[in-house]
Length: 145
Image 1 (cartoon, one colour):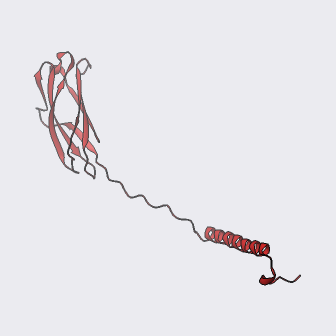
Image 2 (cartoon, rainbow, N blue to C red; image 1 turned 90 degrees about the vertical axis):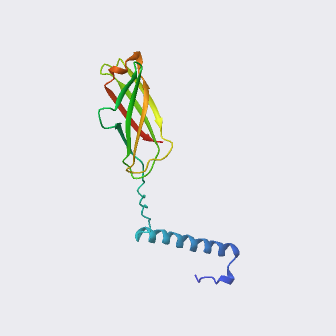
Image 3 (spheres, rainbow, N blue to C red; image 1 turned 120 degrees about the vertical axis):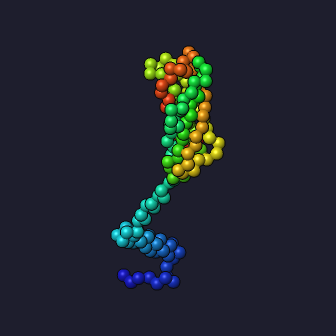
């Protein structure tokens, strides 16, 4: 059987031939891209920078001061140990060894702290049962807001 010339084909035969050629070409391109590594490599994620805070009482013997029986002033230091500036939110928890007397507070710094920078501040905590004089433990935890 001899192949028909393009001019001799009906419209339906021409469409079938074109669809067949496009299908075969597409399949071959897919196979070639799979065989020769046409897949893309995942992009490396850039290292994200973030502020990280360490906190505690200021060095020295005067880091806590009884203001009155129910109030304790604590002097704190927060340092940004991360690699980006950030605004810390610090939660201060104070208590005695038995947990009978305790107080807490949360403070936010409104301006950013740069990497390596320290923020010294003081705050007054209200201690339950007028037990400020018995407080012997202060814990400070800070996070970026």
